[in-house]
Image (cartoon, rainbow, N blue to C red; front, side, top):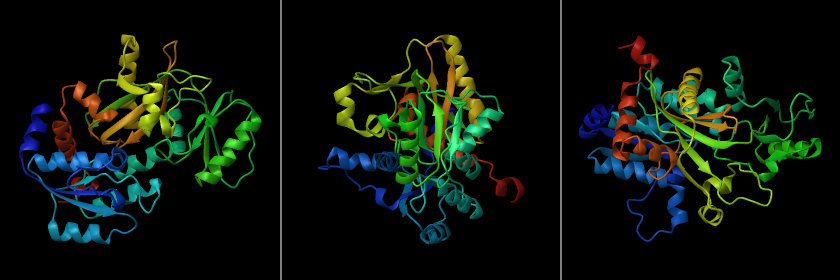
Length: 353
């Protein structure tokens, strides 16, 4: 894998980077505040490293139109599109349409294919597929927006409430954990109103928050297991990945929250996490690069929480750090992602010229 990545890195490519129009990074971060840079840190890291590697890189901001994407592909003819989009027209669940468009254009791209994006972005469908494949996951119920809320008797408290579609911990807070029917009803209504989406309710699993990175199309490689450590969260606050826990640097520093390579997991649990991560990626048709999130209870039981296609790629985030631990530098990781994108056997390649 390292040799392939190195070869791809050495060969100059025409790379069209697509990202949200508000996240096109400047050429330099000199003099900019950390909170400003954090907004587009991934985009900046990927662009600067690919340029430094000698590639011809262009950035294109996309929001609710594909006109400029189409014209740029037709006129410039990039070797590959590096896809950093996480939504289209403000909707997370529509990003797979952009990748479908790239396939219609017969344009190679990095990251996950349309089917995998669509399945993994739909948390309810993900849960149903995990259940079908007998992959352990918390018991759940879906509460559609606009329908009367009927609390199911089969679920055991505490229950965890989140949006059925939004990611990046949107709408997740300490109040997301409910201990009775009254608080559950309130939180479901909150998700319906604030997120404008259906609510997904799961049995809350107490345990360690574990992440497993996966790399590959047909042959899948797992990265070293990573863990979110909740530090000094106290006074009754549950260890969950709220938006502040994930993104607020001052909050993280105040409470000693950090991520690191997981320590002291039994060998049997490590082996099972790697195996489950690959199974889940295959069940959801994920390609390119992905991250699977788990909870591991004290008794060693593993529960799959969700799968993230095209996880955050900034140099200091979980995925790149896990790759670094595996001996894959950031430059080599980007080269490997490029190589997987250019080698992915999309339908037009398999059935066409």
